[in-house]
Length: 150
Image (tube, rainbow, N blue to C red):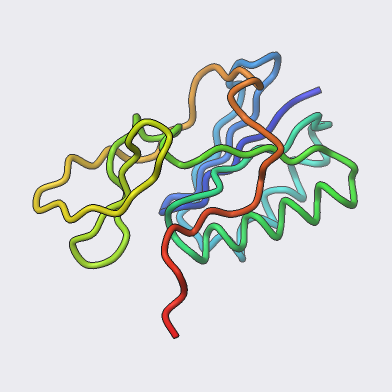
């Protein structure tokens, strides 16, 4: 059995396959999540049996969060595979994440806040080489961080 992590918060889309917590396959794709997730998972589901689906629930690209959540939640329900999640800071060494204008999401302790940053030190998202399932939880609802503009 394998676990899969999906990070669809920016380009490229990152997917990692883990066996006993160790990264065994990494997929990077510059395409739009809505186009490539179904194609990628069609081949992955022929190759692997997943015990957990894991995703970065935000903050990040609204569309990436929505698409990955809906796709993985549907897969979770239809295949009866648990869907786990964590915030995006887990995958970028807690560096700021672009929000809007000069505002960035930052994580202070366990609280995610918006702050103006003139010269942020941005670290891109990366798949961890090893995972511990204890770091993810079943609170998998998306985290957008900013209300929709009306």
